[in-house]
Image (cartoon, rainbow, N blue to C red):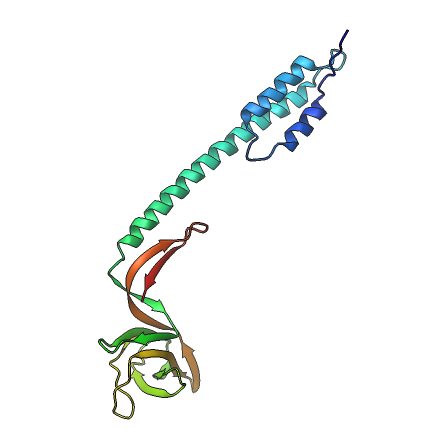
Length: 205
C-alpha cells in the first residue's frame, strides 16, 4: 500500500518562493492551491484565513502582470514617438553645448552664449590647438542668449586656417569674471536611440 505525503501550506509557499518573478504567474498559484486542497491532511485542513490570503495574492500577481504588460506597451510607444520626433530634426540646425568646435573656413562658426543679468562686458576667446589665442569677440551684455559669429578673422587682421578651436566666454559681473556656457550651431545629420536607456541623440558634425 502506497502513501501520499500531503503538501502543506508551508511547503507550497516555499515552492512559490523559489519561482522567479519572470515565470511565476496566476496559473502557478492556482496549481499550487489546487494541489494543496487535493493533498491536504484531513486531520489538518487548510486554514480559511490562509486561503483568503492566498486568494489576495492571486489578485496581486495578476495586477502586477497586467501593469508590466501596460508599461511595456507604453515604453514601445514612447520609443516610436522619440524616433519620429528625432527624424523630423534631421537637416535642421540646433544649438549644442560645446567647449570647442571645428571651423571649416567655408562658413562662419556661429553659436550663442547665455549672459547673466548685470554683466558689464562679455568676451568670447577662440584658441587654436597650439594654445595660441587667435580672436577676441565682444558680445552684447544684455541678459539672455546672445549670438556670436566668427568668420575666421584673427586679431592681427589675418585669416585663421580651418581647424579645431577652443571656445571660452567670460563675463564681468560686479567686478568678477564669470565663465559662461557656450552653445554652437550645428546641423543634425542623423539621430540614434540608445537601446538600453532609450535616450535620443542628435548627431551633428
